[in-house]
Each structure stands twice: as C-alpha cells, then as structure tokens.
Length: 133
Image (cartoon, rainbow, N blue to C red; front, top):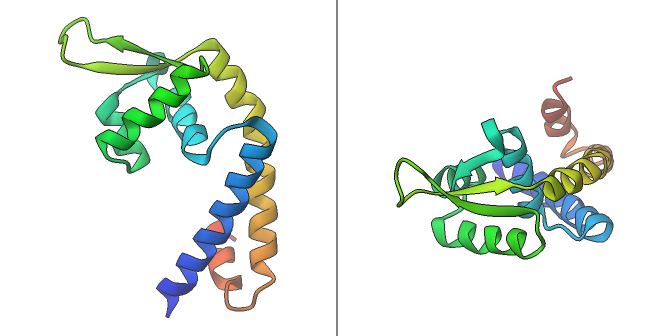
C-alpha cells in the first residue's frame, strides 16, 4: 500500500533530521521548525495558536515547545497590544543565528536521507515525487 510506504519514508527522513539537528545544534526537529516558521513570519512573530497550527501541534504541546525555546533564549513571549489575551512567540536575534546555523545541516541531512531512502526500490517512486523530479 502506498500509504505505508509513505509513512516509512516519512519516519526514515524525520529520524535522520532529528538526529542531525540534535547532534549538531542541540535542537529538536519541532524546535527547528518553530524557529523556521517564526523566522519567516512578518516581524518574526506568530500568535501561539498560529504557531501551533503551522506545526500541526496542539496548544499544550506548542506551549511546552515555546517554553524550551525561551529557556535557551531563542524566542520570547510578547503580549498583543490590541488584545491582552493574545500571546505571541517572537524569534530573538540568538534564535535567528541558531536557525541560520542549523539550516544547512537540515538541508544536507534531508538530501542524504532522501538519497538513502531512494536506494530502496519500494521507496524510489516516492522519493522521486518528493524531490519534484
């Protein structure tokens, strides 16, 4: 079944990305992705719910994730001036530096993981599709 092959490819790639980011930058994969989304956002900030939606996480998980990023100085929280109930996560300068450092590791690891997975004949068509070739 194609879905099972896709799930296997996803798991293989995610595992390699997570190992490389942790080893090289002391970042979890979700932490990297949060920094990436914040770095792309206007003003480097997103409401907590927007970040949760962008990462496909629930509110509780994103709160813990942002807490870890804040502890290391990679993000900070800010209140919405128009609506005091709104809380933003904001990438810091230190977070932008860590993101820039980790981006090449992420890209290299992704390419390597896809290359490795592409050697499996059952995964080759999916790898080709993911690469857009």
